[in-house]
Image (cartoon, rainbow, N blue to C red; front, side, top):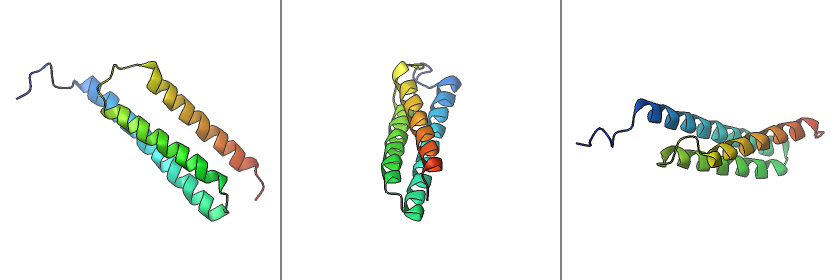
Length: 97
């Protein structure tokens, strides 16, 4: 039986679940971008989809890693992925079909 020091606290579990939720959100956006690439015949959306999927994998890996909470690197990753999503949405809205 693990000692109380080895068991994750509710705070750590909640944080890991939040990171997992973010990973699933990026994976969902990657799927939507992939579907839009196929439906609208927009091959540039394949790169966006791949980038979002890479972000999803990295965020999911962070959720399962034993790291210090509040580290700047994962937060920068989520910020970059969010910026990529925003730019892709603006470009998709402005590109004529």
